[in-house]
Length: 260
Image (cartoon, rainbow, N blue to C red):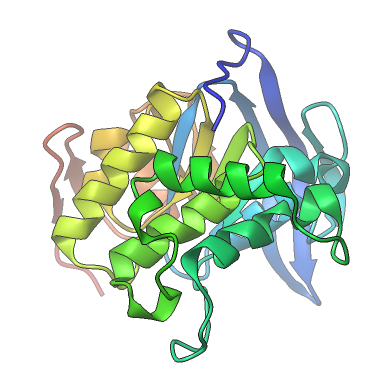
């Protein structure tokens, strides 16, 4: 994995007045967002608030009904080779005999094409990606034999194998225990800080978001974002629809008044 640091303050994502609807239902409303090289953005918000939809729009998998998205100065679908993506839930048959190395190699499809054979360069990139996430010694093991946290590291390696500049992660720690979650967030911090990867992390884990990210946004159809780690109580209450008393960043906790 190349230790390539992007240019300082390079704008890598621009979203302007984005609207996405499903039939008559508005999923995302008037979203505006800019992301720069080196950013680590955490997005929090209630279930059904549009977080996964926003990531898919960044990838060009969902087209906006209104507004514009530019990723590295290109339409999202054309910039996909520079984006790594870890979806909310990776479903696979744990009994299927596929090795960790082969799972990671799947991330090279965007570069070599679906019907081409992997070459020495691809295998070397897969090993480097596994080294970056601390899983090189598991390369020949079957993916189904790994723990949940180890599997997530492999899926991150798969997203890294094409050497992207932007990582999009959708609830990547769901289903793994708290100790492995800490290790996983430390890994993301390393990828951001030491390898220069810009990261967008969707999470319900307020502790992790407050501890590791450099910027925080709340999303519930509308985006509440001020390009910093701080969110006002008013923004959080609007996003969650609940009267939140306090979220303290760094040593985060929250206190909710009684509500329906």
